[in-house]
Length: 349
Image 1 (spheres, rainbow, N blue to C red):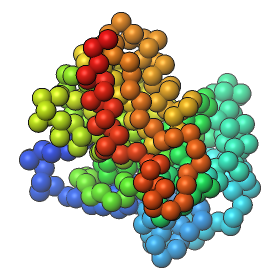
Image 2 (cartoon, rainbow, N blue to C red):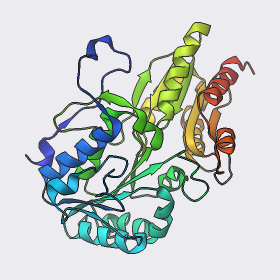
Image 3 (cartoon, rainbow, N blue to C red):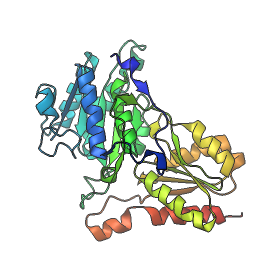
């Protein structure tokens, strides 16, 4: 089957739908793995590389035993040489292959910035669309086990800034598989940033191949009072906060962009026009990050609808501390989201 024939699905099953309880549920890592497995099975030009992809645990389980099925020529471990290996992946993509490069931590993407920013993102444009770089880079961010300043960085704000790169941040098992297949299918570079907390999930995932459109967000919960735009695992936190606030007669709409570049501006602006009150939630740094960019877009295009200043919930502009006590103070979650929603909702100017 050619890639073009794979079924696109925009709307996944609802978080709380009673009708889908008997559908197949798998874990988040199984959803990612199934997407990669089916891409490898679909196209002989697809291969997987990265540190630990053939380990017994298989990169958080996402690549477990793939090397046994597809062989070490198509699923192989790489040394600690991100600079060189990313260059090799870019070269392979330019030559017609479709590499999936697993970086277990985004911190080391800094070492590959020349290859990603100066080459992979630009070749399509520099050669008038005659050259493609079908490269997927997958990485996992977020709070771990006290991973500290050099192993915990959320770099989505940085990569959202760069033209020529698509940036994907799933929040559900369904999207993890569908967006992986969309990324592999894409003819130019896609970075997928997952979050460790996503791997705690189980979710409904069809067993057949399907794609989730890159650049198309989804409303996770409809509401009329406040719009919450949340990223990655914070979509789930925002959803549960929204459910909780229903008892206080506050009706919150939760939007999951799913991809940050391209950003689905339409779904955001339509919601802002309805509610007039906005909270943006991201697990990266606040200054010049995702919350700042989305805020600026809303002010530029929907200022007349705003009834209150935009609320932003993000991590402090500090290197990530080590140790559970300091991490608890540093990272954001449901309490901070709820506080921001209540502040925006109660604002009367």
